[in-house]
Image (cartoon, rainbow, N blue to C red; front, side, top):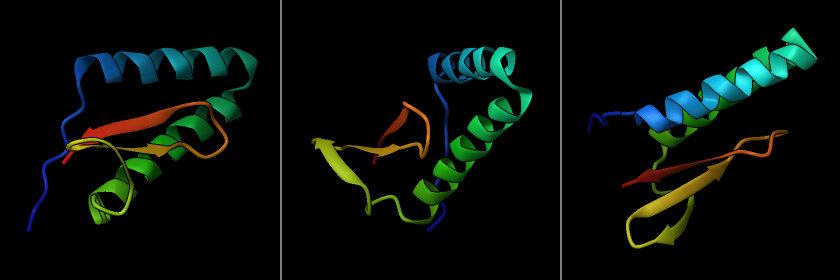
Length: 74
């Protein structure tokens, strides 16, 4: 079964702002944030039901090393 990944505009804006913030601290840190974000998305696509259920159809997965989580509907 093929899954469709759709990022809300708010999510795109938030990850962009976070990357810009971390870039001011260290470009490498910013790159690592984006890498962890896309690794998290790939993990969700590979096994969407594996992650913690937080509400009816919503699940979440925390980004490693950073204080962010991806909340998604299944």
